[in-house]
Image (cartoon, rainbow, N blue to C red):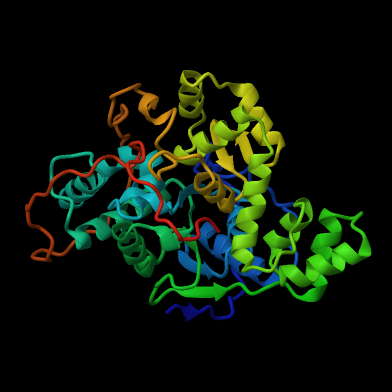
Length: 426
């Protein structure tokens, strides 16, 4: 259960930008802008996020859990927060169904840009976190120390300026990553860290403030549809408004399909809408979409190297981008919406029941800047700086040295297919 979010107090004036403020990182979100257009029907949710960001700029930490149905606007609100994060460092992670059984996969994805800072943590915490992330030989199974190390590392990063962490599709986080991040979220105080989760109903985040997103009201739904499809015939418009039930993604997607009105549960309809659009693309663009779906880090260089081995190129990527499936920029390739990744994965041609078996996985390019077989990528030495650490008290549990087999790195090629019958994305 999540705790309802209390009314937010008016925050103190944000401090002026200083030399320590860092912009949104490449690949970590869209450029910050104070002129971000509002989302239809989400005024109060946007206000809560704005207050959370304003508090982080003044050194106060906070967390928030956004919950709701697929396509209801959770990811859009995370994008809104990223675009409003002027002066904040942004780190992001997305739960992936095929990695839900890989311990610490999502935590590695979130912290990967800052892993050189692990060396600055207290010794036991650094050993535990390195072991959990496959970067050292020490044990990585002490959940208390790993959670404490996560908290300390977020605090260490925030020493250089306020920090925003966005975790999408949190319902698919591996349990170990979820435990570490929730542990840290419940203990954030005065570090200048804002941590926002987006998840479907059922994501358990005890002790954290939360908001459940419902359908858009009739006025907001009609306004969104008119903005997106101003030339729809009145009969079609009324039918879309009725069938979408206030789901923003459905309002956007249903008018783009040939026959969107076959009665069926809404999430399945949205998935089939994407699958139909994918099926109408050229082979190269479809293969590129599947390639980006399998490359969970979104690194553009990795995607293009792997594409080259399959006889694909930037032109195929451009077709997929112009079709509205992918965004390319800042050295990253990403899906416009998580449901698009899911539809690509589940609609892929498969051999033996897995969309990952076929023409390209055996030629997969290593997902590191160091080239095939290089793990982990080269790391620069940390710089000396004043820092604030969280430390376990003497005699606290979690200082053992038990060992376990090392987990394969989270950026290894997929080894198992998605679980049939489970709805991905959103």
